[in-house]
Length: 188
Image (cartoon, rainbow, N blue to C red):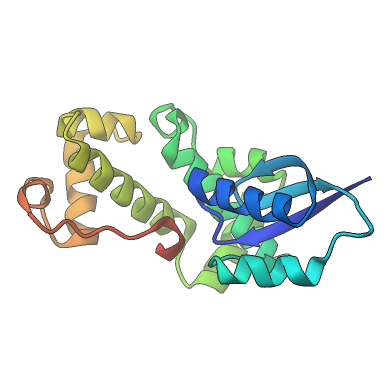
């Protein structure tokens, strides 16, 4: 028998490592670890209260509310979408998200907007902006290559959205000495 734990703020590979180590330190047998969720082999001796405390001390939170779980699943799927090659493909966000979560996009969209106060589309734009910031700082790709990697048809489209979100042109941001970035769990 397996048990799935849904974890809030688990948004990157480093988060997965920290959460995995926390589970293992408490004697859990990990079956699977993905953004926002950990599957363990059920063990009656496993201390769930201690796990909650350990995770909270590290900035994570065990979730039980079904709506919170779906919201975190949406966020994790969209982070994966933007962070992977998928955003550069011709796949639509709504198709990707519906397929990933096996639910109607209209349901997911309404739930997300109601709970987070922002549309899924705007959230994706914010994620792409943060990814663009990261790629600009790495200084390995041109603005056109960054736009393509993030699924934009043109670099001018990315440039307009980037300026709208940050208040800076991509060139201004690149030339800044003090780069401002948000962690993925702070994007809303």
